[in-house]
Image 1 (spheres, helix red, strand yellow):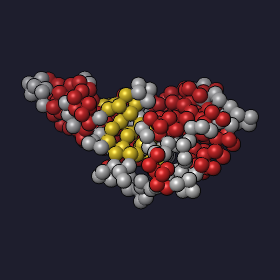
Image 2 (image 1 turned 30 degrees about the horizontal axis):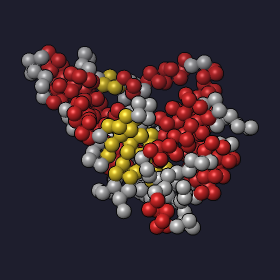
Image 3 (image 1 turned 90 degrees about the vertical axis):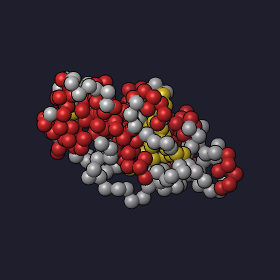
Image 4 (image 1 turned 180 degrees about the vertical axis):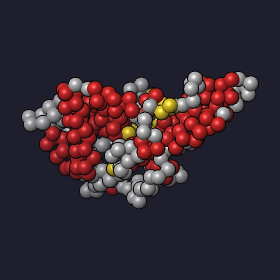
Length: 301
């Protein structure tokens, strides 16, 4: 049977939870990030009618900074300048992310938990999207536009904040290029969120025109893009903007059937004091319930 997989940018979802439910505490601990994350996972499974999930995490120091030391320098600078209170809160968020990655998701029975030293969640998502079985479908859940390059016939992207889905068709309608050309656009224009410097004076709209072929060769910007310096910048940036990052090692076991156990979910939410999540277990279709029966692993809802 064909499957629909959710490919989750877990660090994005955890940051989102940090800003919405981050202050939530139980009797002994701060658990707001964990609560918001698990709530979103359950809601996403219900929205897209699937219990097949791949969890993708940032892990370790980004290896891209070895190629380009300025990579995400603005974020590093913000961390240096943050107050002691903000530093403590950020460290607490990271602690909860680690708890999810190391123990809680496994206790529930999720099997596809991806991370690799030096790689980011979008690398893991891109790798998973490329390895997707031909007849399966995937929905990337993220706000990172870099992941547009992963769009395909059977791969779409959902941005929770805007409740917006981008498909191969809607992407082409908006940008007039194919997803695999998106890394080139970012390489030319740069990426402010990752502190990647592009060619001076060239923004995303102009880079798109160049890639599409509608930028006149007589345009002075075209000369800058095609100059020796411009070509060097593009060559360097393509290493940074192309997903997945070239040196990453393919994941040995991917798209493994989960062993989601009702007791596992209940024990985790009860332990954390998440009473409102007791009635929001991972979604399971009626046909799967009927096929596997109550004694099989998985939630019966």
